[in-house]
Image 1 (cartoon, rainbow, N blue to C red):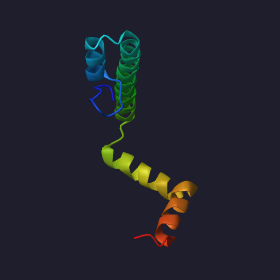
Image 2: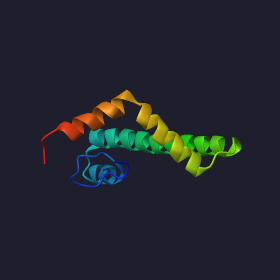
Image 3: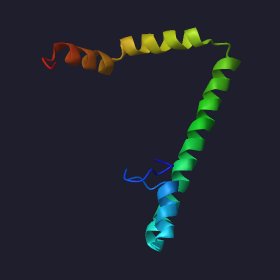
Image 4: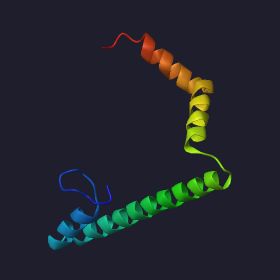
Length: 93
């Protein structure tokens, strides 16, 4: 979405350049705003991923322990059990 490939409905970097080249100033400003926010969101995601990664390593956890924690949490989750039951009992092919 941040790149804004043409004909996808996104308002990213590529579409922003095309819109400004077509002299559509208002649409270009909206594309600038959308592109900036997509990049901020991406940088925020990387920042928080890094913080979680650092936290796990400071605590001495390993990737195998993280997988085990996710698995045990999913098994205990009522929402996951309901979704699995619904998928298993549906007659869709």
